[in-house]
Amino acid sequence: MRILTWVKPTDSQIHIWNYFGAIKPMMQLAEKFKDAEIFLFLANMHGFTYVHDGKEIKQNSLNVLKLYAACGVDMKRFIIYNPAEIPGHAQLNWVLTCLTHMGFMERMHSYKEALDKGNAKNISVGTFCYPILMAADILLYDTDIVPVGKDQKQHVEYARDIAIKFNAAYGETFKIPDVYTQEDVWLILWIDGRKMSKSYNNYIWLLDDEKTILKRVKQIPTSTQTVEEPKNPDECNVYKICKLFLTPEEDEILRKRYQAGGLSYKDAKDYLYEKIIAFVQPIQKKYAEISDQEIIDLVKKNTQKVNELAQKKIENVYKKVGFTL
Ligand code: TRP
Image 1: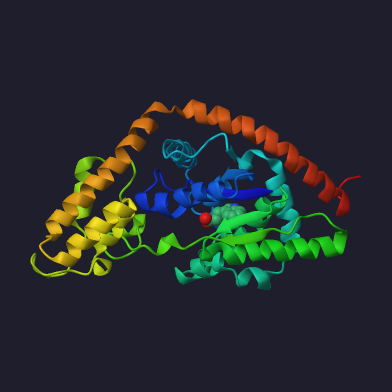
Image 2 (image 1 turned 135 degrees about the horizontal axis):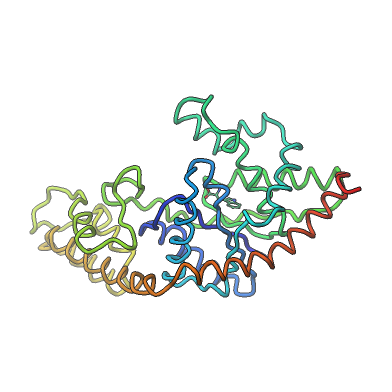
């Protein structure tokens, strides 16, 4: 069985929320599907829909992959590769583009989101056709499962539809992938009660220093309840964030302290601060030990192997659509 997942190099770093929303669920998935082969690709061609600075994309890619490794992602278990160096992605992308109607793409989440941001005329054609490239990523490799959040579900469903359509017209060619929706950890609200995002300036990078982390923790809004008052932990942002870092036993103790009264928000924040520091420090240490070159060598090696699969699939597709003479 093959699972396909990705890492997007659109930021120079990874924030804590990415860890809990993407990296941790990915590692849990690997645990759950012990025998599955897991393809993890660098979504650089995808990030190019809005990050156009070549140096930035390259450096982000390396930083982010090093951070994945530093977070404990097993670089042997996860086959990390670079689709931009595999011609099959662009080749299949074109074939599928010609078989897809505009009306279908107009309904896609990625395009609608871009429309919501304003000027329709300035949306790149790449953004419009984005789900087609995604379908190529998926269908090239006979993927069985694509784990996605709710926002990407529709795109994977399009990949299923176009695969079914292709198979019906040209004969059995593509495996029909299943969507696997993971629990929405993304709903955890962050420091200012909003989701963590670069655009809200409310993020904590995994590589942030102690001073920055302290500043962020201090920014967490709390209620006006007095120290003495018993508090409901589930209504407190500090608790909700803290919970991510706690063992069930520690969680139990903290909940009791909230409920008993006498816990100040300052104390709760100090505790959270300590927990975040204890979490990021080993990651930062490991990150410093990994070189860019190590990552490049590994990705190149994997990419060569994965390319062989892609090439086979493309040969088959090209024959069927009459491109090969
Ligand atoms: N669209 C995904 C995102 O924005 C990334 C992605 C690219 C992807 N190709 C894919 C996801 C194929 C699943 C399958 O986060």
